Length: 552
Image (cartoon, rainbow, N blue to C red; front, side, top):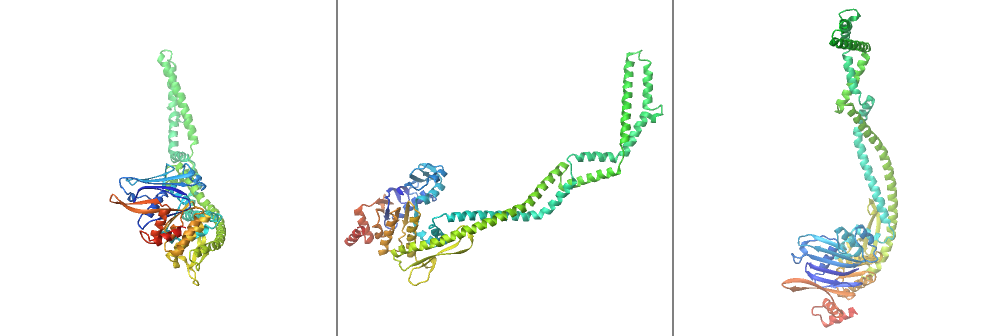
């Protein structure tokens, strides 16, 4: 419930403090006095955009602050979600600075506007006369009908709808990816098979290149080895061979080793050289025996290297290790592409199940709406009769929609006829402004009974009504005020007389400036104000008498 409202430096209001009673509160005043300014200030507390144009004095900040009793509304989890301290008395404050910046506070703690926007629908419903047009929209009519459901059928349907649409988008993305993959999959398979069949080894290229070098020069190598053997050994017959000469040299020195110390060292060195040369000859002979040219091996090595070089050029790499990396990458891509078919089949099954669940939830929701339509029609007709529309008929039509949407598989349409014997037509086509105002009041009175809000504010919802109907409007609002706070901005004296609390807004000229003041009227002032609304200012004696009768 709205308890207090403080407004400072906002539009025509320099400063005002209002205390609101529970029950039915009416706000009156001449046109342009500033009644709707209060709604603009409250809108700031509900998260609406701030504008420095509302600053009455441009060098001072604007402050709007209100207190609400929110006990019993179950809002503690919302405060916890925004890491804010909860209290049964809620204090909202909004400041607009001359620098165009604005600040918001919840219980004196800085808060963001999203928190205010989340809080708003739970604590206050502001209904302006322009909102009456929303009654003609299909979306509003659907929400209205769903407000008569005591279950969470719409939430269950929307959960199924979100799952179905999400899986459907996922399937579409996978299908598109599959189509793209198919364009390159065959070529990737060919490249992979080519690399797999090559059976590449990381270190084979260097070994093959060394072997190829050896095979290509086998003849030259064997000729050189034969020459080395011939020089060293002379085929085992020549006394001119290196071995024979070293043997002779060693023998010559052996006779003189005792004559000079240096000769002994020379002898040992020649002896070592002879042994080393004989080892070399053994190794050369062994290598010569092993080294045999194989045309088949030469062909294999050449072909293998040609394959490696061709694959390296094809994949723009310079090593077998890099080719192996290409092979592994292609293998992963091909496996992913091939597994995509399995994933598509899996998601298709999920889509089918989700669609079946969507259909089921939609059917349950549709049946619930048909049941709620009968309840809504039965509930609204007595109120329309009370508002002087006893001949009117209203039917809530629920028909299948072309497709499943966020709100279900139904088209909801309010069909209306204000006159006896006329045909039912969509509300938007046949209802006048006054009829829409009365219909909206009837709707609000029914909905607030079912979905309790602490406070509702009507901004001239009584537009287009007068006489006995205005009395009925006042009675309906007073009945609503039995279980919630109702605030009505009105020009109707009959309605004003029904209120528990009467606030008056008036303009005044002060220091060459027009300002707006709001104050509570006492019982005597109320009679005078209602009489002025009935006649003129000052009021006539008959108007005063009528005002007393209305008040009584």
